Length: 283
Ligand SMILES: C[S@@+](CC[C@H](N)C(=O)[O-])C[C@H]1O[C@@H](n2cnc3c(N)ncnc32)[C@H](O)[C@@H]1O
Image 1 (cartoon, rainbow, N blue to C red):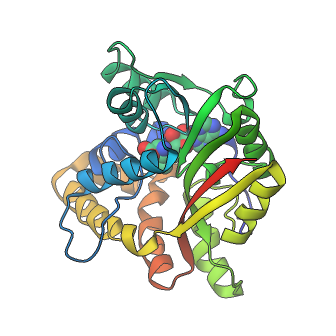
Image 2 (tube, protein in one colour):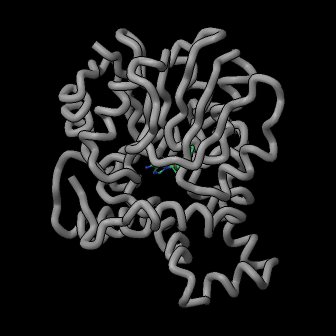
Image 3 (tube, rainbow, N blue to C red):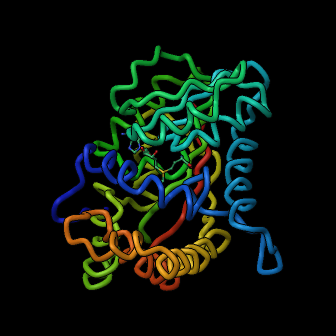
């Protein structure tokens, strides 16, 4: 497990997404996660590729019309809306960010659209066994107390139902310099209280009563996201004096996000970090 010296509190995670709201929406769009490309010849735009990752997760969750689905860490609710509008699911999404929830509500409101709550997953208030599926795209690593994170997933799932998650994971070999200069700063700058290995996530799920039925290392299918984001960041800084002021302002704690992007690219190139997808079934 990788843990930065001063792990992020939940308030810092909320402040991160509230503070960077405009940047995230401009740089990524409605889906705040990696894009998924099938291979080098796939020339999908980042918008198509990020939606592609959400559709891949939804497919593996085997959602049917009328299913009750929980979208943990739902961001702007884009995956929740896909689940509701294109798969007929009854969806609740949860985010810590009031800005994300406000956006999700502003573009929602159609009959059957998801309910989007500003709520901590660790205090989710859901009933035992109410969900036919749980999806969690790139959010669990933001949460402290991982045994409880997975215990909550298992608690809300019906027996036999599935969770599909993707997340930022550390490679299995620990190397002091790489952990200190690449992975720990990525955790600190990205507001991740800890980053776990594939094996550790597997063990946490098993302890919670979740049987892992599939794991995929998506790293080489998603890492292309970052050069695209860098190009967009540079273009934004070049044309917008406000963006340049934000990056220079020492009081803006979340401007470090700009620093973390090259580190993330290095982490993928050196295989220090893995973008993992798990499908697990409640026993
Ligand atoms: C990288 S974004 C991913 C958003 C969304 N899943 C997507 O793919 O577009 C991480 C999300 O996790 C949410 N999050 C982090 N910790 C959380 C917690 N304890 N409870 C609920 N949401 C949380 C953040 O608010 C944010 O919406």
